[in-house]
Length: 252
Image 1 (cartoon, one colour):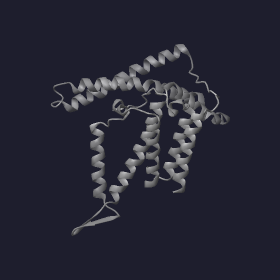
Image 2 (cartoon, one colour):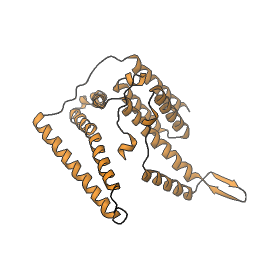
Image 3 (cartoon, one colour):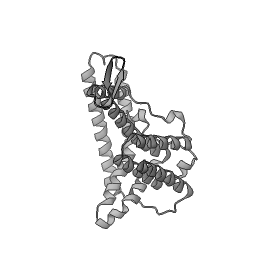
Image 4 (cartoon, one colour):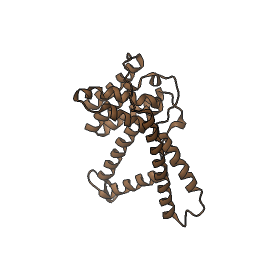
């Protein structure tokens, strides 16, 4: 599933979005998340999707970078829409000699719009930012919390390890899923095969965690440096567009 969503897969390029630093993109993402969280209306969803479309076009990303939702996810979304339609609620649409309440359906559609919009923003950051720059941006944003003597270095170190390990685990899971799909007896032993797949993923994760722990023990603590480079023109452009989007969400 992670592989089909193309999560945290850097797509090289020389656009304005690519040249912008990780700090500006993470800051813009945080601003938009807060704005959408406090005002998740249809107008806000439209602004978020417009912003995501502009960034995708401005970054000149190929169409192949777009995610391919797994079939199970599409089925789950379809079931949720049917349940939302059955829930009813205002408004009511009249047609012919009857009527139908679509309040629940509209609420479910808006929920999908918010969720998928935030996912699209996160994917855009991953597509245009090298993985090694993300922990540096997190360390820069969390730096004020050092005044409260919070363990920021430990938090950033954990984030660094998670970012580094996620592609490895996605590759392991994709390999295990491909092997499971190719088994001719999966229709007769579906439940057993699912248990085997879960056990394989757990074993792989444990092995990766053990190797990572041994490497950390021999290397020592992980310290992510905080760079204080100047803001470039691309950073200001990204922040300007994000600030405009946030202002539009607040005003409308």
